[in-house]
Image 1: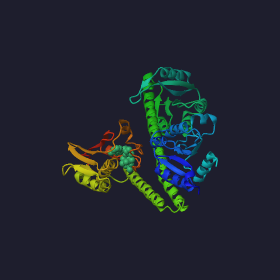
Image 2: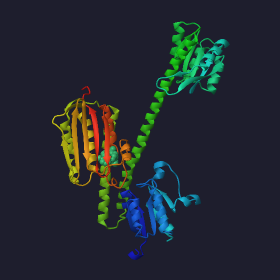
Image 3: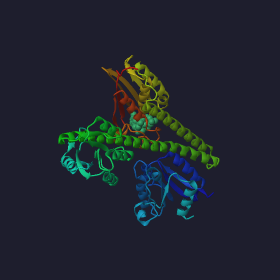
Amino acid sequence: MTKAATKKTILLVDDDIDFLIQTEAVLQKDGFQVIRAESQKEAEELLQNIKPDLAILDLMMENFDGGFALAYHVKKSNPGVPVIICSAVTSETGMQFDASTEEERSWIKADLFIPKPIRHEQLLREIHKLLKD
Amino acid sequence: MQKLQTLVVDDEPGMRLGIRKVLSKYTLKLPDVDEEIGFEVDLAESGEEAIEKIGANRPDVLLLDYKLPSMSGLEVLEKVRAEDSEMVIIMITAYASLDTAVSAIKRGAFDFLAKPFEPAELKKTVSKAVQNLILARQVRKLEREKHQVRFQFISVLGHELKSPLNAIEGYLNIMHDRIAGDDLGSYDQMIRRSQVRIQGMRKMIADLLDLTRIESGQKKRELSEQNVFTIAKTALETVQPSADEKGITVNLNAHDPIMMNCDSGEIEIVLNNLLSNGVKYNRENGKVDLVIKKNKNLVTFSATDTGIGMTKEECDRLFGEFVRIKNAKTRNILGSGLGLSIVKKIAAMYSGSVSVTSTPDIGSTFTVTLQSDLPIS
Ligand SMILES: Nc1ncnc2c1ncn2[C@@H]1O[C@H](COP(=O)(O)OP(=O)(O)OP(=O)(O)O)[C@@H](O)[C@H]1O
Ligand SMILES: [Mg+2]
């Protein structure tokens, strides 16, 4: 495992505590340092003091589109930081979107959209791709 | 104005045109329908032509002569009925014998008109038939809506049951793969969370059983005269352990006895839900007061807590199935969102009502008013 100082930091935001615990365990096993937040508000406060290397955000928290707002926030203060939005909206509402076209990328400030339930191997693969390591 | 498609089938041109003249100027107003109803009249001079026109454009109302040149009115009637149960059919007959009328009605005609008839008679018969048609449509619409609500309920239910299963399965997989290495504390937390999710699921299933028992009406209600003070005491005991965990005091403020005709199981469900909410959505060391009063034939239960409260907008949504208020204050409180919808259903069974007043961060009062003198079984 890499030394603590060189560990990359991931900001993980979701109001589902079970998702947080499980994803954190998986990311830690893979050598990441994880900072958790349970709400959009908590995440916004954290972002004043931390500079994560990547952010994984839930879409619907206390606000319907909290994830999008937060993604915008992350990108504004940390332009190069990749953002993944994870959400169950597709399975819950049948709504379909991802960040693969230019047009969508222009208003969704996220690099990737992963529908829940996520598969851990897929999440890790995508993270490494985005971090280019 | 709503226009009903009407087809008049008669081989006598005078009859066809006469009926069209009367009906196309006729409008009627039904008691429970907002719209006026008018008629768009089309004509056919033989059974064959009628079948062709019906195939192309299905009418709502069919006025059908009994005696037609080749294909008879009865044949047309039978053919149409075989494919369509909704269209109202009125037979026109020159032989006003009871026999013809009976055989037509047996085959599915709604009514008959005996030739010759006055415009007033025509209008009266058509108006009766239309009332029947509109009523039947409303019943069908209601049934469809009920079906839709059922369907929605089941799909939300499926989702609500899947989510704890997913969480528990996720924990089991992580533990199985020893993802947290030898960090035992981490596994302990996963086991605890799995237990919490299982508990939540069990509570939801218990709520569902309450709900189906109430809705199906299968189990006979046992209405008898009961002392609700005693029932309330039992409910207080039930909620006591969870109140103790948060240092919450639960008080009962009522006379002993307060008699009412009820099914004690139903009253217990109502009180358990009000008290458990009062405790769950309370602060540490808070208070829940249950007040029961009887005034004439009404018994009022009100539960007041010192908890997180709700905004006006949140109060309006509360009583629906699976509705839970999602915010930072409720995030770690478990529930399926069925409790108050059950309370509302039971209140309706006592010709009663439920209401709520609430102030954020101060507390809420839920009031259930029930009629106490339902006839006993
Ligand atoms: N006393 C209360 N104070 C504040 N909020 C309340 C109170 N009672 C109910 N609520 C709100 O209303 C919602 C619906 O309540 P309800 O009892 O139907 O469901 P629940 O408590 O979430 O689940 P359960 O089916 O287990 O009772 C709750 O999720 C909560 O947000
Ligand atoms: Mg409840």
